[in-house]
Image 1 (cartoon, rainbow, N blue to C red):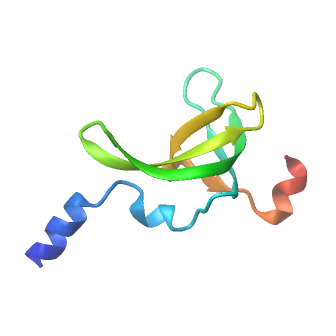
Image 2 (image 1 turned 90 degrees about the horizontal axis):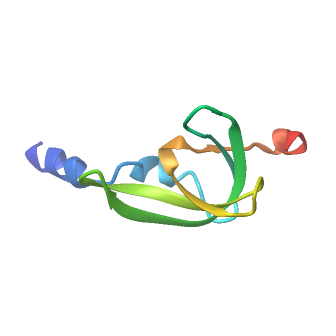
Length: 88
């Protein structure tokens, strides 16, 4: 039991949910700040980074709005389902 607790303590934030995503997925996420609009993009990389004192799983996306790459924690992402692709 102690070992399970220690392993889960060292696991990166977003490890479990990151298994649901892969490079090439179309995803959406909400931006922070005043605008709070939804943004859309394609995942080009999934990686871990040390932020705020712990490891976090991030996804790098090419953003549709401005064609720039952004990195967002995978826990903030939603995969766009096939039936919603026409709305993008």
